[in-house]
Amino acid sequence: MYNLTDINTVKQILGDNGFKFSKALGQNFIINPNVCPEMADSCGAGRGCGVIEIGPGIGVLTVELCQRADKVVCIELDKRLLPILDKTLADFDNVKVINEDVLKVDLKKLIEDEFDGMDVYVCANLPYYITSPIIMMLLESKLPIKALTVMVQKEAAQRICAPVGSRDCGAVTVAVDYYSKAYKLFDVSKGSFMPAPKVDSSVIRMDIREKPEIQIENEKLFFDVVRAAFGQRRKTAVNSLSSGLQMPKDKIASVLTECGFDLNVRAETMTMTDFANITKALEK
Ligand code: SAM
Image (cartoon, rainbow, N blue to C red; front, top):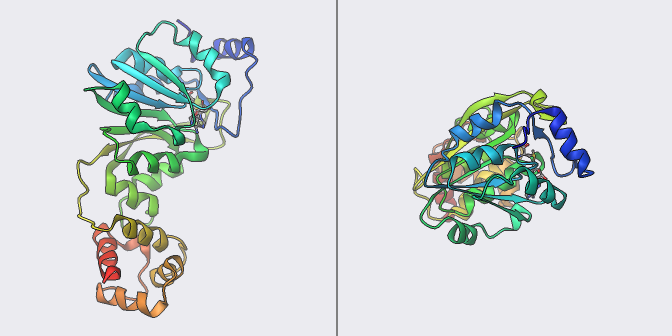
């Protein structure tokens, strides 16, 4: 078995395969030996469970997941990594690698085909250039998944895990909170990667809610409202909503007044119920 956190071993494997890191694909591989065992321990993977890993790289986290879960399916876009993964995962017969863009995979079908009867978890050190699209796709598809444990940039983690109604809250916070309960597990310094990125990272976990805490009839309009409200952070909600939803300012002002807001209100101070009430009032 390879030691995938030993720098010389990693250099040797990459060199033997003529592999050069792609910045565009967000390739920063973990070389800190403590990170992957801790991620795998905290992601929920165990006997009777299946794990989907996005972007296995050379397999440093995959190995830890294979040791804990019944089955691991990895989705890796970069086909140059496939011959490497063949070697680094050779000791495991409970892993499958799919060479695809995760945003294009039919994950519902994948889960039905690969994880029959198992509890399914996602665990990944995400490529940072598409962190939000991946998280939102996983949540919005309403997949039968128990939890997502992902490494993201520290700043993104702060925003995702912020309480709704706080200064750090953004549209992604509200969306994540609608579908899941998100919390930070631990920080990871930039020196834990090869090559080292410019910023530190955090590992966060999102436990998927069986159903949202508040009932929303028109989810599309609700998320349009949330996106519009946070669209222009320095503006008041009346201005952001008016331009984001392309509705006259006086109409938005009367909706906000009807919902009990002062017209200087900003999106950061609104709660989930506030967004739901605005959505309902706009539907009338
Ligand atoms: N899991 C490895 C680790 O922790 O060392 C690698 C993580 S690296 C931050 C992100 C990985 O995602 C890379 O292997 C990259 O090639 C892959 N990747 C980038 N875009 C992808 C996409 N759209 N679909 C699937 N994998 C992707």
